Amino acid sequence: MFLGIDIGSSSSKAVILDENLSILGKAVINTGTGTLGPEKAIEIALTKAGLDREAIKYSIVTGYGRITYAKADKQITEISCHAKGVAHMVPGARTVIDIGGQDVKVIRLDDSGRVENFVMNDKCAAGTGRFLEVMARILDCDIEMLASLDTLSTKEIIISNTCTVFAESEVISQLSTGAKRENVAKGAHHAVAKRVAGLAHRIGIRPEVVMTGGVALNKGVVTALETELGVHIEIVKNPQIVGALGAALFAAELYK
Amino acid sequence: MNSIAQIIAGFEEQAKYPAKAVTAAIKKTGKKAVGCFPYYTPEEIIYAAGMLPVGLWGGQTEIKAADKYLQSFCCSIMRANVEFGMKGTYDMLSAVIIPTYCDTLKCICENWKSAVPNIYLIPMVYPQNIKIEAGVTYMMAEFKRVQDELTKVSGKTITEQDLLDSIAVYEKYRSTMQEFVKIVNLYPNTLNARVRHFIIKAAYFSDKKIYTEKLAELIAELKKSPAEEFDGLKVVITGILAEPDALLDSFVENNIIFAADDLAQESRQFRTNIGEGSTAIEKLARRVANQSCSLLYDEKKTRGQLLIDLVKETKADGVVISMMKFCDPEEFDYPIFKKELEAAKIPMLYLEIEQQMDAAEQIRTRIQSFSEMMVKH
Image (tube, rainbow over all chains, first blue to last red; front, side):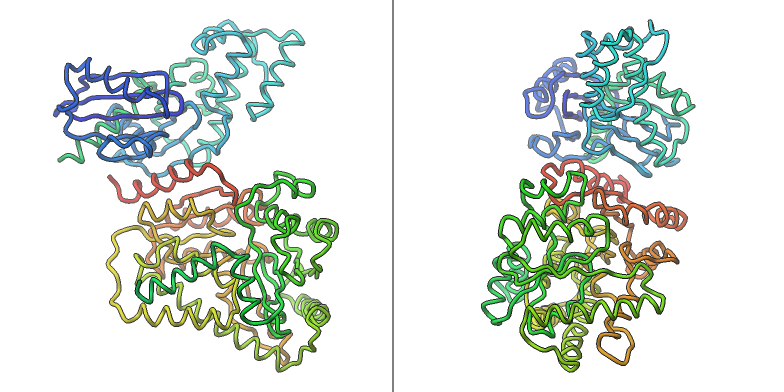
């Protein structure tokens, strides 16, 4: 059995594969690096698989917390792991957009599904899950509610500041002058999409485009991104675990 | 410790603790020291005046005092230099030369007078068009003015022979450096990215003649051993500089060496030999006219081809762009050479750096991903 662990900035994910590369267990815990999240995710995935730790033959850790996590056999970056996971799930994928808690990555794959080029955002929360968390707080709703709020919108309130801190002030100012919450939610999704599209254009978009990471669960962002890029975006099942799946696939490959 | 490790440790000590190294060099040689702001100053004239040229290339420090003069969106090297000046780190210097290659440097020239009044300022203006005759003539006049200023600081009259002798020391330094950066490819494990950087940087904080002799000794020692086996990646790195240490450590961790560089702090300093001319000053001016750098206007935009040639020459796997944040001249060059490298199908890794980067995690992920991408899992 092979274990993949993806320790992000705001969540921890684990995937266990059998010899045939079928998923036996998976888990997502909403606490990331520096917490007990990774251990909890592994325990849950093991329980679901009906296995104990000794059954794991090889493990790979990925994500922001990969360097400090000492219990895996090897660490590989989330860029390589997301690419690996996507290529396994969607063989025709040529572009991967991963929006995580505090970074954004756009990865271009070659015809054999390997990483050909990639770009990452700078150390800035603009265009990431953190930006949406801040927006949800100002709009007084759970982050999961942002997408349904967006569906009620009648127009997009433009958020011109890319900086999360400035955007927060801008949105407060919009709300104080009577802007509707749902229109602001739409604006927040488009703000993320514009930022990500800018990044994606640096390396070029080749269909098929697949989105991974927790933000892929937000339909508002996906729709906004499709509009900004002018392409259909495929969302895989369980987009949060793609990095951990890629890590587990590497574990199986390297064990051989 | 064998002699190779000993020489390297000496260079590393100098590069990591510049203030200590410069103070020691002043004591050892009995010479005064003159600070040289990036990127290019006529060090040969300082040396001819019997003084030590010292490279001022910023460093790791918390920026507090310099905020009064330079905003957070200014180049991190210049912010650090002003901070060090205001904190007294440069008090062992008898003067500084500040050239005006970019907008930030132009401001510092004026700021220095009130920010660090105790260190004598010699400003220097380079011509915009360095390659035309009028540019060379102007540069010669400017070098002569700097020569007069340095005479005042040193109290020594600088003769033509002094200048020619100094040029000879620098030519020896340049040819030794040119040999050194090539030899890295034969001893990539010993001269990894970190060690290579420290060895090159140490030259800024010691007497050039003494440094060159030590480096020549290192090269001779290295040559006694057979070339080393290497299974990592070779890259050509381009930009202003490759710092801080965390950046270099990431290259070492991922077994990536610098097969060649196009860095302002490294090869751009010594890859161009002295120019032709009937006087020492003319030779110095024509050398600058022959130099290539984003800070020196290049009408023909030759950087892309230069990088392609370096990749071919060293059989490198790709090019790393070490982009100094907020450096306009470097950013203007980037789209032009990026297109050329893409057309030549040379893989690239773009890194945006600052000298005072407190969190290097993203840089580390980028470098490791590039390494994983190149070895093709």
